[in-house]
Length: 100
Image (cartoon, rainbow, N blue to C red; front, side, top):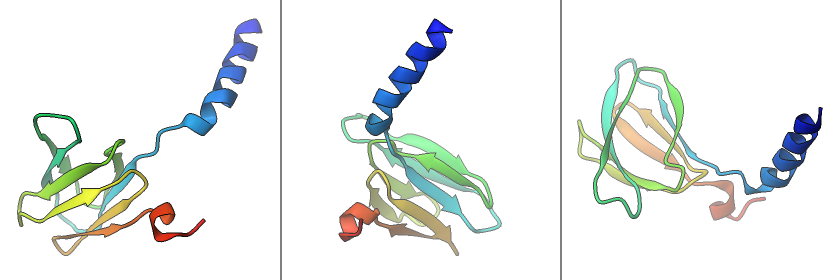
């Protein structure tokens, strides 16, 4: 019981500090390979997204390179990246657009 109360307090206090990540969605019927380069890292990470998948990625923002086309986009946390017809489109976060 005591541990549950402590856990609840910690989660309540840590809630506002939660880390947000960008989302990556593939609306195409084939999988693709990307490279993600996070700030401060000396190397890029390969990433494969399967058909019709939606995942969270790039918790601190990153640069994504679409290997099949060479397209590169810079992504911030809270952004949404959609692959549609072999093209990556970035929807910037609400905060960057001046919304709520």
